[in-house]
Image (cartoon, rainbow over all chains, first blue to last red; front, side, top):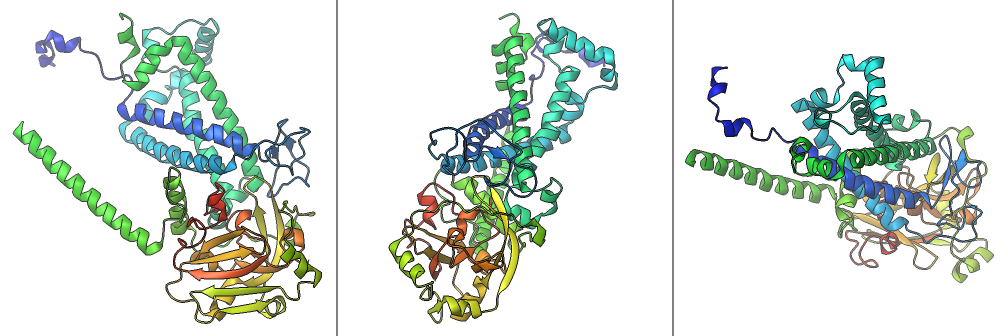
Length: 250
Length: 252
């Protein structure tokens, strides 16, 4: 284009677009907040019955699939602990479901944005060349050597990152919402097959627990990587949108 | 600049008009279908309201899953209850012959039924899931007369919106909206798994609301009040559950 040469110098050195789009930044932090609320309240609710089952039903008179070695907030649960924790289910359940609404509505906004703007295709879908063994081992070797990300890596995602994000967005979050809804007696009455496909309401509860653990694991690794590659610049990139590369001179 | 600001003005105008008509439409919908729960205030109100409204739009007529006889939990689990009151024990000593269920409020004919009368009414047997908010559950066969049958006999007035039900145990009461009260699976239950309803499971009379969590199925019920507003009952939050920190609507 002939016009390019006539663009004033000031414009050409202006900062490139934000590292993350405004919608991505807003939905990221809304999801973070709701996930933290869901995690804490989910843990509290779990303490009222730290046993898990498979199938439709389960209670203290039935053998559990497994029992977490935790005390309980209910006297009816045999835990081996001599004390009973205070009941926190009232506010925990209220906050759990309210945070779930925030997470679901935020997720829907993010999905709509991702599909309409090509965010998923452009930023998260790995290129077919990325699926080679060399590309994978390259990324993993870099991580094992704890080599800090260079400027190109700081402005894009590598193949392992892309797959992890896709897994969280399109598998773990939908699954944790589905299994959560499957525990609802009213939802089960309207959509019975959403429960039977999972193997029953207690199976749904057990899957809900494991997916939550995977999501927590993701958050821990995600946070560790953010710290590793520069906590302040990454936080700034996800909050104000300022690209990490711009930070180098500061 | 003037083009831009005019465009912006038009945009804001359209936005405001859309917002106002959206609010108007929303309020009309909410009033018409009763989509706000009695405990819909406070910081958890938006979440409770979204859940209740979504369920009333999607599950108003849905039927709780019913299971084959082989799915019945053996043994079922009876949750703890507070020590039984003296009033209960007196009736228990008389084999519950004098147990009565009263219906009053917005009905054409207030009535009171004995246990024997209730057992003579049309009955329904259903094998459904009972899930506790704590996380455990069991499946049992429940036999009783549909609450809708008693409401029909008493003649519910058209402005009725809720049914309040009370246990003989002190401070144990709850309420449901008409969608659940008139639902064919909402049973005034007196039998379980083929026998009389055991005391630990709520006998002689328990209201089973199978599309909601176990705590809505209040044990030892003695009275029903049909009403158009829950403001006059307790703290006005719909039941004893919100007063103890739990949600009024437990269909989650």
